[in-house]
Image (spheres, rainbow, N blue to C red):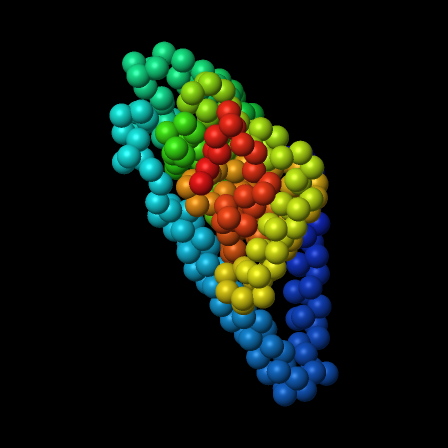
Length: 296
């Protein structure tokens, strides 16, 4: 890889030298001065347009992320049940900064079902470190970068429904060396506090509801696009992506909210990470659980 890069740079250098030589020999003697000025103006205009676009994208990106951070949840109401845990580790090549929920096992020892699952699936520190270090060998070394620091950040929102169901949104911010912006990924966990098991799409929604729910999600996206606000350049959710992300939802007393990683329904710099649907609009698609509605 290094050899290829060196050869490519050499070729580019030769091409640049050749261009400079030609310029010396033919210093635009056949190009009218007015055309030269026009070309310069076009280049300046293009630069200004690109700079303005970049500034606008940075602005809308910050709005999008701020909306995620400031979304209210039920942490305060769940302080007895949910213990906020932290893990922080800083090395030369990476930073791990995790905040995550831990269910109080003194209240109910069976809450360990949730805690063990979360630890095994989302807090595998050794696997994350190995992944980062492997990426460093490929990326940093090949580009000749002496020091590049990656960041992995996990934080969460948590919601309670009828004291029997908790919904957890884990949002994972990944900053990769050499990239201009962080990327965001999401995992949603719904846990039945009475039966100590996780609730997935097929547990919560009736059979064969996918087509109607996908249409409802896409209607919401289309309305956002037509509004001309921050949904510009977004697009409807594909059937394939819905199958991948259909378990990625959280529930509160009024809405069901589906979360999608960067670039699934919107580019990273605009739009939204989630689609919120009022429960009253899809109540006919929601199952009853233990003969009691999960919501409402």
